[in-house]
Length: 309
Figure (cartoon, one colour):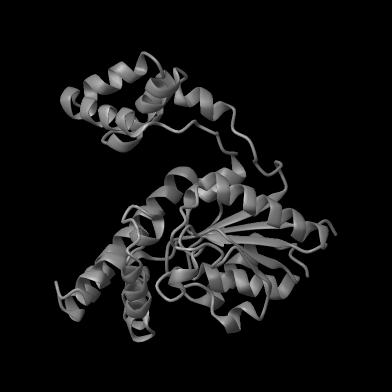
């Protein structure tokens, strides 16, 4: 049988890691990380990376491979993931790509446009122009050089509108034209995908419970170690959900209870953003809407009736 590629996406605490591990056990597959923060070795607890016991059940790749002082781009992850997927296929095994970073999956399914770096000054000017002109006038100006982006980007999306303009200002080429030359996509028909979208109330309750467990399991120790390194606050690892809130507690700015509540709230917001992304960019992916692990597995089998080890 030709090795298969399975893509499993979902918001934080939705159960996707458990589903991926069960699938890997059934088909003898290997798991590839598609979570931007589980890349970093510094935050095993706070990013809910698989435990050593879970990793013993199936080979895991791209988990904890980066130092917090590094900043992995989507392109770097894509190149690493494609290499790993190729190696897994060469061993005759299925690759199971799992995570909650939507851009990573887009890079695999649609390819990635290598857009040149934009100077900070150009980026700042684009943002200032947006604030000065207002969205309507800014969008009209963008439409003159990149009509596809002006049409595609939704109302109120300041970040993406400014990004489209700054790319044109820096390169003289529309962002849409850069994106049309995307490379690195998996071959059409080579992968199957599912997105987990459990009921929101239950998901939020799981988010809250997991944050409490993380503090009990030593998440503050991880954050304290990051603080001691004096890393740049703009690095991805420093933006992980819970880092800022726990750092405020450790530095005496707030209490443990207040830090936990703030981190729980931010986790719920993060889960909501992930689900919004899935509904917009993964609208055609089959959904698993159950909440329990057994029901999720049952839905997965129903979506893949030909599944065999």
